[in-house]
Amino acid sequence: MSGGGGGAEPAPEPAPEPEPENSTLLDEGPTAFLEPPARYDEQRAGSGSAADNSWSSVRAVRNRPPRQAALQLRRLDPWSALKLGLVLAVVLFFIWLVAVGVLYGALDGMGVWDRLNGTYADLVSGDTPTGSPLISAGRVFGFAAVIGAINSLLFAVAVTVGAFVYNVSADLVGGIEVTLSERD
Image 1 (cartoon, rainbow, N blue to C red):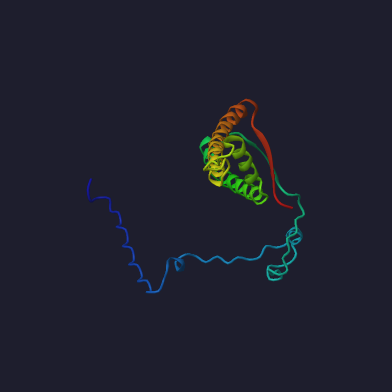
Image 2: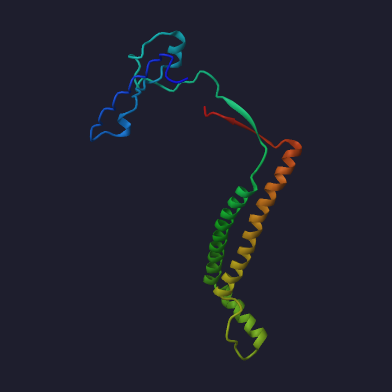
């Protein structure tokens, strides 16, 4: 079955017009002109024209109450909870170190560490002074760093386990109900 049927051949497509040298993709699309929205009262009454409205005369008037949606938080992703927990743990670790530094500096300024180190030296060594003090900045910050690192790790693990526990309990009872609303 070749050739018979007498069908007309499709017309050849016209050649594309050459583009100007300084054209961009933005010039090719249709242009949309935005008009300011009419006020709610004017839309209901059908009065007024688009020419009467200008951006300066439009005011945000809402005659309806804000929309609300009641949603349930059904699942927390444990991986995203772990990532957020790690970020918060690092921030809390640095806050912990700054707080320890401020407290150490305040107590050092009042002479508390000198008195404690002197009392310790008197109790332990008697007449012969020891080489290193009991409480120093290095020991305090080292101890604080170890405690802060352990707390950071425990915090991140607790947040992740909390996400798992929430998911299991939300499957049983339905999760937390949240009501979202538009601003007034």
